[in-house]
Image 1 (cartoon, one colour):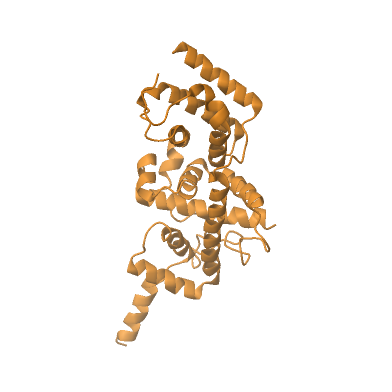
Image 2: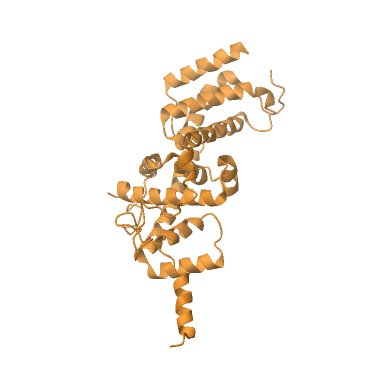
Length: 102
Length: 196
């Protein structure tokens, strides 16, 4: 039987398919840069058929959100943690020693 | 001592004025109070040596933070060079055997238990910042050192790819693989530790 356009289409489609490993890599990669069309399409097609990777994509979004909250927690102006008095005086002593040596 | 015009340096007051601030900053990035204390001390000593180069264009605090940032990156660098092999191997292995199946016909599918399980990564109800930070710290600590470094610099310091590649002397594709592997592990860890 001759290999018609339908067959060629099938071969083409199957070559476009990616598995979860690649899909999850692309989900991460799109945080870093714009995906090219081919990769964007591959990911889109994979997500259409794979509920695990859809969940993964959603959770990576939640991870981003969590890291935002974390960033707020460590970077706001007030000091969230205090240097212990011991460490403070130790560092102060070190600093003064260097100052006097100057 | 210093010839700066707008901002002056006053090392005598550094610990009192900026000790807590630098300590908090460092602790958010290395998550080990001993290490964070060391970093604060190293920062002050390095600042002392570099005082002549302070031109008063920025505030004393901003200047000290920029030195601390350098020190933090240096500690990650040290971790790299001591683990050269672990570092190089990240280039090849996009497809992590710890997470995906390797046998046909299911090659590349999620391994049981490593893929996403629960519907959401976040606990139900209001999100408590303190709790969230606790679990993120815990999970970052579980990352292999190079992955932790890349992840922290990318997500907490919000460095872009170019800067990161330059700082860590790696290629972009290497960095992307590392970030992917870090995200895989962070997601899994948060799901298992936080939600259980």
